[in-house]
Every structure is written in C-alpha cells, then in structure tokens.
Length: 219
Image (cartoon, rainbow, N blue to C red; front, side):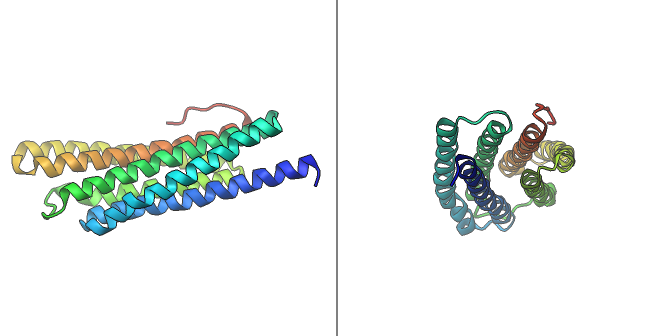
C-alpha cells in the first residue's frame, strides 16, 4: 500500500471512529432528557455509567489523531482533516459531559413529582440539540458547508427557548418559593442543553473550516 493510500485509509477510519462516538453521544443526550422527564433514576444512572465508555473512546480516537499528525506530517487540507477531527471530538466529549450533568440533576430531583410549568420545553430543547448534532455530523461526512450553516441557525431556536425557560422559572420561583429547588435544577438542565447546542455549532464551524479553510464564528 502506498503512503498516500495508507494515509487515506487512516483518515477514513478516523471519520468512522468519530461517527461511532457521535452515535453514543446522541443516545446519551436523548437518554438523559428522557430520564429527567420520567424521573427515571435507573436511566440516569445508565447515562452516568455510559460516560466512561465515551471518555475512553475519546482518548483512543484523540491518540489516533495525534499519531496521525506526528507520523504523516500532513499539510494543507490533509492537516485540516486531522485538526477538524480533534475539534469535533472535543465538542462531542463536552456534550457527553453535559448529558451526565443532566442525569445528575435527575438524581437530585427524584422522589418528588415535577410541578413547574415549563417542563415541556426541556424535551423540545433536547430534540433540537440532538438534531443539531446529527446535522453537524452529516455535514462533516458530506463536506456540506450549506448544511453546516443551516444547522448552526438552529442554535438561535435553542437560545430563544432557553431565554423563555429562564424567564418562566425565575418568575415561578418568585411566585411560589416552594418550587425554588426544582426550578434551580431545571435552570441548570436548560443551560446544559443550551451548551450542547453551542458545541454542535462548533462542529458546524469545524466543517466550514475543513471545506473552505476559513474560520467562521457562527455562535
């Protein structure tokens, strides 16, 4: 196998590894939100335990990226491919950490029914965040700059819902102090989902950099 063929094979394997990790992260986000809505402590515990596998995979793939750069010394677009892989990996790992944060909030909220008004917005934010992750990875696989830009536009929707949740929870705490603890945890959860969307936007920015060589701030 020629050096070029070997390098191309390594890049293809890197992409598949990233997609494998992305699939685990998407599932973690979904499971974390579902465990919260259902106050499913066992489900939340699974999300927390599953993060160890994601962390191990992250380190394994990151190591491959570093070795690829060190041994092949890529230039121009090849170097951008490797750097983009590292950027996407980091964003995915941080999303997984926020899924764990949501699961831990579920643990703290267990044992009592959720009574705050804006609970329905949390799954909506979760769905948007998951869609952003999916679209960002599709854009990555296909080198689709337009899809990356469109995906980043969804971040505005997430920000809008977050602002709405923030206002409603703060008002609810002032009207009924008994909801302070629940509202505080849900504020954290909505913030975690907003941050997941931000990290998905970072993936979109990385795709644009990969394809065009331009650094764009889309968040």
